[in-house]
Figure 1 (cartoon, rainbow over the protein chains, first blue to last red):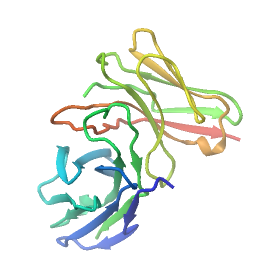
Figure 2 (figure 1 turned 90 degrees about the vertical axis):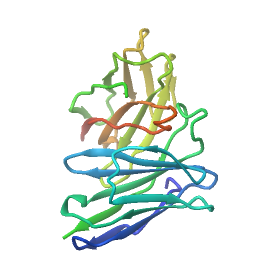
Figure 3 (figure 1 turned 45 degrees about the vertical axis):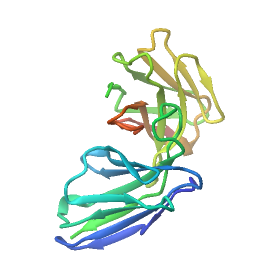
Length: 117
Length: 113
């Protein structure tokens, strides 16, 4: 158990819909990362938040957005869903943001499996 | 991001050592080498990391070449539970890149009983 909690574990929805994925980081971790893993793309970095502020952006679509709340949990919002958005979405957390960022490990949750029909 | 190159797949027998290679010829002087693994249907899991010196922990050992252009993850006695995709990653930290990990294709390790 990594200490990172993601909900829901599975989600099935239709094209055009909107979903919200939730992540609770490990206690004390200030950084939250979101990754997407699909069969043909591997693990793709989407976005990082550090203590409520956006820190880095990766291959995140404009239809997707995220935020980190004062209690440090994070939500990833996916809207106007398309078939190609079907994937595993992982959240990870770590203690640091930038300082010492090369050395610390990331702790990943078990993922939310999104299926868009 | 500095790039790493790993074999697509490797096989090992149970209870034998496994050496997983990684090439990173464009590594910069301040890049740390991280290894993660992903078991089936699970999120990635930290294995080990290092900068210049060889490192050991309860899971594995990391041997880093003197010129740092390559490294090897060593599993001393493979078990069936070690069957996973192993990712070698150069940690990317910066003003615009944050402290994210950039995953490549990894090496699929198969452990035979």
